[in-house]
Length: 274
Image (cartoon, rainbow, N blue to C red; front, side):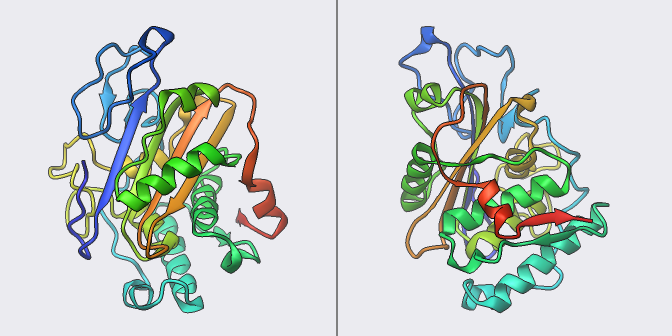
C-alpha cells in the first residue's frame, strides 16, 4: 500500500495480472500484497504495474518537482475555482516542459467545469498521454466507473472483479487512488511527485531503489503493451474531488459501451499540441 506523507493525504496504488480460466476464482493481488501465485503472462508482479506490461512506460523524472506556480493554497481552499484550474494546469505544463516536452499546450475542453469529477480526471490523464505521443484511453466504461467510485468512497485502490475484467477483454490494468485537491492536483502528484525524496507522496517509494517508485505515473503513461483497446474508469467519494480513484486498462476485446469518450472531449476542444 502507498500512504501519502505530503499535505496530510493518502495516495494508494494497485496493479494486477489477469488470471487464466484455470484461476477463475482468484482475485488480482493488490500492490500491498505478496506476489501472485501462478502468473499467466510469465512476469512477476511489480508494485505499480507489470514488468514488461503496465510499467513499460516512459522514462521516470530524476526527482520530484515542486509545482510552479504553487497551486496548493488556492486548490486547497476551493479546487473547483477557475483560479485553481488555471494554476494547476500551468504547473502541469511547467513540469512537462522541464521533462523536455516543451512548447506543448494542454487545452481542457470548453465544458470542463460542467464535467463530473470522474470525467475531468479522465480528460487530464488522456492529455498527459497525448502530449507524450501515447495512445489515449478510448473512454470511461460503467463497470470501471463503479469500481472506482466504490474505491473512492472507501479510500482504497480500485480492484475490479475477475469477471468484470474478462467481460471487458482486459489483459492488464493499473489503478490509482488519491485524497487530494481535485483532478488536476491528483494528476500532478501522480505524475510529478511520485518518486523518492522531498515532496514525494508515494509510501511505496521509501528508498531510491524501491519497486513502487513512480508506480502511479507508470499506470497513467504505461504502454499497456500497445494493446488495441484502452479503457478507463474514474470516480469520486465525498466530499467530491477530495477522494478520487481511477482504473486504466489494456485489452483486445471489442470496445464496450462508454459513458464518456476522448472523442467527446476533443469535440469540445480538448487537445495537447505544440
